[in-house]
Image (cartoon, rainbow, N blue to C red; front, side, top):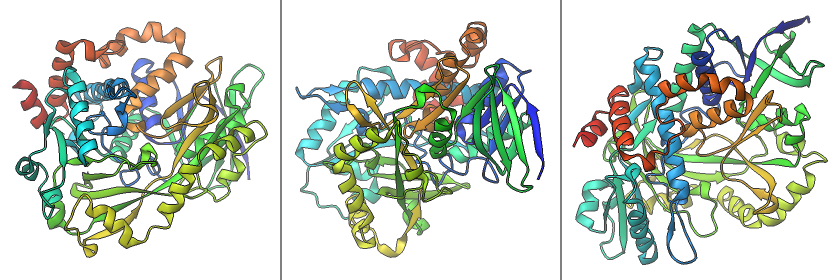
Length: 501
């Protein structure tokens, strides 16, 4: 075994959508920047970004009810929904720029127009949905959202969901035709193909073992070449840790103060995939329900039309599970080895607070296939067991940290950036909305870690992402124009037609 020493400007750890996005942004802003990528697996986009491991909704809060909470006075808080939608718009604009610049091609390989719907049962939930539509209706980002309680209309919107349903139950839905289905696996691989053409060195089957601060403030990254067994040492002035569930362990190895008192809780997922193509063809929408009382936000059930490998696919889920692994290709010791003296009390506090979540996960793990079919039949009353099979989805590691609002050991249900005070290293932790808001999250990383350069880069950023620094919800004309332009560039003909009208 030999040891190799190399120097570079930037190191990206993990070949997922986040590293792909950050690398693509940096290469446009600083073409001469030397970037090196290390990925443990054999190719890009195999863990959280993979199309079978990721919901692919293009989270824009058009149908996800957990982004609009009901306040104690009964009114609807739309803050998070607007924020998530604004962030998704940045991603759309950057993808459009890459297509217009001919840096990536064939957007139809990764993005498709598809209606986004919310479906609820029971009088209380119907009233909630009605109030949600009213609260969002004045916002340009949600223009075109329709609401109905009429069974005949619902049959046209979602025939598979209404077929065999009793007509007496209160039921309502919203529909918006400007939703998308995104294959983040394909997008990730497309972006890495682009980066390779831009002379970014991408090293697959290379596992990062350690990170160490050098005397001049740079970072030395110890890498194991899995195939040759060689140990390599790569030094860079900036390191991004974007390897999904693997990020927490590497962040802890940095020893930066910002990494203390942070833990992670792994949650695995299962989906049911429709094996009968005739059934899959009867449904054309992403239909999101409401999480059951006591269930965490990540458990929101949804019946999703997806396009995977050029084929229309129908998925239902997610069913949560528990595995101590932080990655699908991880180790059963991941959870245990993430507990350190500086986060043990944070983790214990979370364990005490989240007994409800623990109970929910145990119940989910214990579900039989028939019980899962019963949950599916709440969406598809005539679903037959022989038409569906179980698919293992990706691992998610929810962040646990001490917060002012939640106190010690608070479980976070979002995407979090942790960076060193001097901006020399940053890590991405957490889960949804994740991939959909990758451009926003990576701009956040750049603002923290390249503050001086960002002033110089700002004109180019505005060229790539015209709404950078602008609230589109308060700029309806700009939003309309950008929606029309990005729809045309990304081949979303149905959406372009709607916007034109």
